[in-house]
Amino acid sequence: MPKDYSRSSRVVEQIKRELAELIRLEVKDPRVGFITITDVEITPDYAHAKVFFSSFKGKDAADEAIRGLRSASAFLRRELGRRVRIHTTPELHFHYDNSIEEGTRLSAIIDKAMEDTAPADDEAGNAAEDDKSV
Image 1: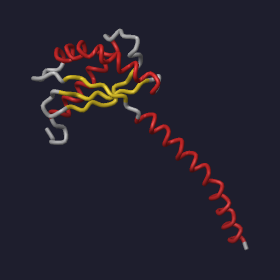
Image 2: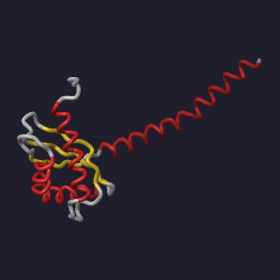
Image 3: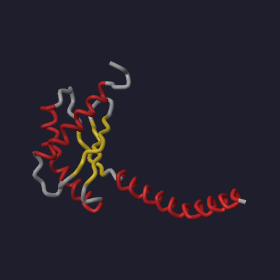
Image 4: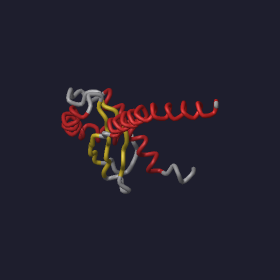
Protein backbone atom coordinates (compact mmCIF):
# COMPACT_ATOMS: atom_id res chain seq x y z
CA MET A 1 0.00 0.00 0.00
CA PRO A 2 1.48 3.41 -0.93
CA LYS A 3 2.50 5.83 1.81
CA ASP A 4 0.17 8.47 0.36
CA TYR A 5 -2.80 6.48 1.59
CA SER A 6 -1.91 5.87 5.22
CA ARG A 7 -3.99 4.17 7.86
CA SER A 8 -5.15 7.49 9.27
CA SER A 9 -6.35 8.57 5.81
CA ARG A 10 -8.39 5.39 5.51
CA VAL A 11 -9.83 5.87 9.00
CA VAL A 12 -10.75 9.49 8.19
CA GLU A 13 -12.54 8.44 5.01
CA GLN A 14 -14.44 5.70 6.81
CA ILE A 15 -15.44 8.08 9.63
CA LYS A 16 -16.63 10.59 7.05
CA ARG A 17 -18.76 8.00 5.25
CA GLU A 18 -20.22 6.53 8.42
CA LEU A 19 -21.04 9.92 9.96
CA ALA A 20 -22.74 11.07 6.77
CA GLU A 21 -24.88 7.95 6.75
CA LEU A 22 -25.67 8.14 10.46
CA ILE A 23 -26.67 11.79 10.28
CA ARG A 24 -28.78 11.24 7.18
CA LEU A 25 -30.60 8.13 8.41
CA GLU A 26 -30.48 8.05 12.22
CA VAL A 27 -30.36 11.59 13.62
CA LYS A 28 -33.91 12.83 14.04
CA ASP A 29 -33.09 16.28 15.46
CA PRO A 30 -34.79 18.92 13.28
CA ARG A 31 -32.00 21.41 14.06
CA VAL A 32 -29.55 19.33 12.07
CA GLY A 33 -31.52 19.47 8.82
CA PHE A 34 -29.77 18.76 5.53
CA ILE A 35 -26.04 18.88 6.05
CA THR A 36 -23.06 17.51 4.16
CA ILE A 37 -19.90 16.27 5.84
CA THR A 38 -17.13 18.02 3.90
CA ASP A 39 -14.04 16.93 5.81
CA VAL A 40 -12.78 15.17 8.92
CA GLU A 41 -9.46 15.83 10.62
CA ILE A 42 -8.28 13.38 13.25
CA THR A 43 -5.50 13.66 15.83
CA PRO A 44 -2.64 11.14 15.57
CA ASP A 45 -3.88 9.30 18.67
CA TYR A 46 -7.46 9.15 17.30
CA ALA A 47 -8.77 10.83 20.46
CA HIS A 48 -10.38 13.84 18.75
CA ALA A 49 -11.92 14.42 15.34
CA LYS A 50 -12.87 17.77 13.84
CA VAL A 51 -15.90 17.22 11.64
CA PHE A 52 -16.50 19.95 9.07
CA PHE A 53 -19.94 20.29 7.53
CA SER A 54 -21.88 22.56 5.23
CA SER A 55 -25.60 23.19 5.31
CA PHE A 56 -28.09 23.65 2.49
CA LYS A 57 -29.65 26.40 4.58
CA GLY A 58 -26.36 28.31 4.62
CA LYS A 59 -24.51 30.01 7.42
CA ASP A 60 -27.74 31.23 9.03
CA ALA A 61 -28.66 27.70 10.15
CA ALA A 62 -25.11 26.67 11.12
CA ASP A 63 -25.44 27.55 14.82
CA GLU A 64 -28.65 25.53 15.14
CA ALA A 65 -27.07 22.61 13.29
CA ILE A 66 -24.02 22.69 15.57
CA ARG A 67 -26.26 22.60 18.65
CA GLY A 68 -28.18 19.66 17.18
CA LEU A 69 -24.99 17.81 16.27
CA ARG A 70 -23.50 18.39 19.71
CA SER A 71 -26.62 16.98 21.37
CA ALA A 72 -26.37 13.93 19.09
CA SER A 73 -22.60 13.55 19.46
CA ALA A 74 -22.76 10.84 22.16
CA PHE A 75 -25.10 8.76 19.96
CA LEU A 76 -22.93 9.38 16.89
CA ARG A 77 -19.76 8.45 18.75
CA ARG A 78 -21.29 5.24 20.10
CA GLU A 79 -22.55 4.18 16.67
CA LEU A 80 -19.25 5.15 15.09
CA GLY A 81 -17.48 2.91 17.61
CA ARG A 82 -19.67 0.01 16.53
CA ARG A 83 -19.05 0.58 12.82
CA VAL A 84 -15.39 1.64 12.68
CA ARG A 85 -12.95 -0.80 14.21
CA ILE A 86 -10.31 1.36 15.88
CA HIS A 87 -8.87 1.23 19.37
CA THR A 88 -10.17 4.67 20.42
CA THR A 89 -13.37 6.17 19.10
CA PRO A 90 -12.67 9.89 18.69
CA GLU A 91 -14.53 12.64 20.48
CA LEU A 92 -16.40 14.58 17.80
CA HIS A 93 -16.04 18.35 17.41
CA PHE A 94 -18.32 19.91 14.81
CA HIS A 95 -17.34 23.00 12.78
CA TYR A 96 -19.22 24.81 10.05
CA ASP A 97 -17.31 24.81 6.74
CA ASN A 98 -17.90 27.99 4.77
CA SER A 99 -15.50 27.07 1.95
CA ILE A 100 -18.34 26.39 -0.50
CA GLU A 101 -19.92 29.79 0.16
CA GLU A 102 -16.51 31.45 0.02
CA GLY A 103 -15.72 29.70 -3.27
CA THR A 104 -19.02 30.86 -4.75
CA ARG A 105 -18.32 34.41 -3.60
CA LEU A 106 -14.82 34.40 -5.09
CA SER A 107 -16.11 32.91 -8.33
CA ALA A 108 -18.68 35.71 -8.60
CA ILE A 109 -15.93 38.30 -8.04
CA ILE A 110 -13.77 36.71 -10.76
CA ASP A 111 -16.73 36.55 -13.17
CA LYS A 112 -17.48 40.22 -12.53
CA ALA A 113 -13.84 41.16 -13.08
CA MET A 114 -13.81 39.20 -16.36
CA GLU A 115 -16.98 40.98 -17.52
CA ASP A 116 -15.45 44.36 -16.67
CA THR A 117 -12.27 43.65 -18.67
CA ALA A 118 -13.98 41.94 -21.63
CA PRO A 119 -15.23 45.13 -23.38
CA ALA A 120 -11.79 46.73 -23.12
CA ASP A 121 -10.19 43.64 -24.68
CA ASP A 122 -12.75 43.61 -27.53
CA GLU A 123 -12.10 47.29 -28.32
CA ALA A 124 -8.34 46.71 -28.38
CA GLY A 125 -8.82 43.68 -30.65
CA ASN A 126 -11.02 45.65 -33.09
CA ALA A 127 -8.47 48.49 -33.24
CA ALA A 128 -5.69 45.98 -34.03
CA GLU A 129 -7.79 44.47 -36.87
CA ASP A 130 -8.43 47.95 -38.31
CA ASP A 131 -4.67 48.56 -38.43
CA LYS A 132 -4.13 45.26 -40.32
CA SER A 133 -6.62 46.13 -43.04
CA VAL A 134 -4.74 49.28 -44.08
